[in-house]
Image (cartoon, rainbow, N blue to C red; front, side, top):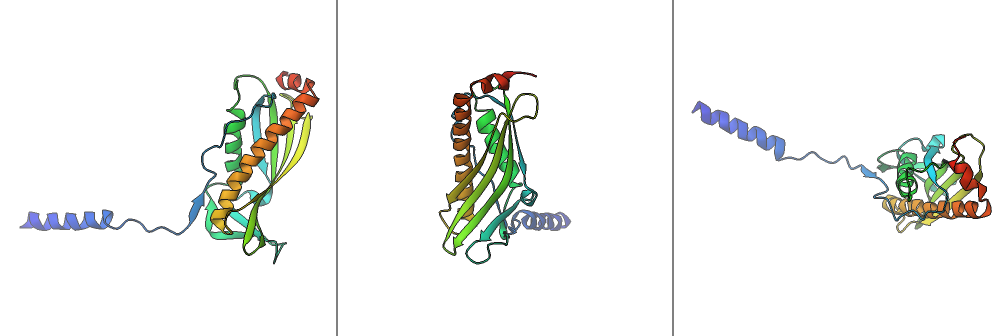
Length: 204
């Protein structure tokens, strides 16, 4: 009889542990998904890629701005955020495609120093929004801090829906567009300044 009681208590305890899964907090955590298409190698080898964020982009908050109503104020979604600060997610995407997507990863190359100035969902009306991605890029030699080339990039990517999920979809597409623009820019640098390729391979 005693064994039966203990067995019943054990069954009830297990039911309590496994029969009621933990409740979701309601917070949606987003990333940029798998890396996109292959890197269109522009002829300039990149050995190191580093992306530094502006101070206001150092948290995982998913930011948006109501440009039509309150253009000087930033908001953060209360039930949607990034799994890590945006700069970490974007840097990971760029490294997988640019650095590790090259024909010869073992080759010496330049350093690509990026600064993330803006990454937000901007609402031009209550029904329409877009992701704004602004990055400053400097192409640096293998050694030294004198830029070989520099350019600022601004990507405006319309969101499919005027909500947090639409902002995430637009953000992923904006990063894909940035990858294409970086490749085109580096290709232009290689064609217009051939010595750049040599400087990228020099150790000093």
